[in-house]
Image (cartoon, rainbow, N blue to C red; front, side, top):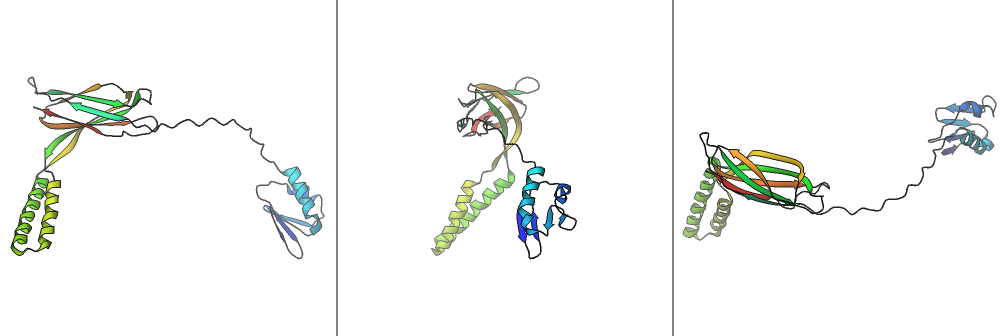
Length: 231
């Protein structure tokens, strides 16, 4: 409630309070009280408190107090993260169709999830990248040029620049891995070794990654990787 007083009249504003103007008008004569929206003006200042009590008592509708519910004890949070294991076994293509079946053994260990969690496998194949190979050769060429300039002039600027290209050369790989298969187990059993059989005709070097997530929303503490080759 907000009350604002002036010399001639008093204004009372109600917030979250419902009232009916008809009952309040019965107390005063015409012109003594004026209503406008959720506020009214009263020309008789001594009756301001009385009007508030009448309107608040007869026309307000306070909410019923909610019953006090007993507080449940705080349950301990599951902060343990699943741990993953992976092991790949190489396979050879057989038959007239030249299909190889690789057994990918994986395991997720988490003793606090009721022996179940969300599991996903990701199979990737290694490819040779010509763009990365050219970049790697460029770094090697720049390293040799700057080292030759350093030996000739003994200027350490060329030495630092050569070391920069040497680090880039060692960091860059000419091979990349591309995802070729997703195996989504969903909500499945864990705490035991399981096998996923991957079939393919394409030979080369592969790897697979194991992802897990328990019911509490904790992701795996490590991403297990297992490599295998298809001959």
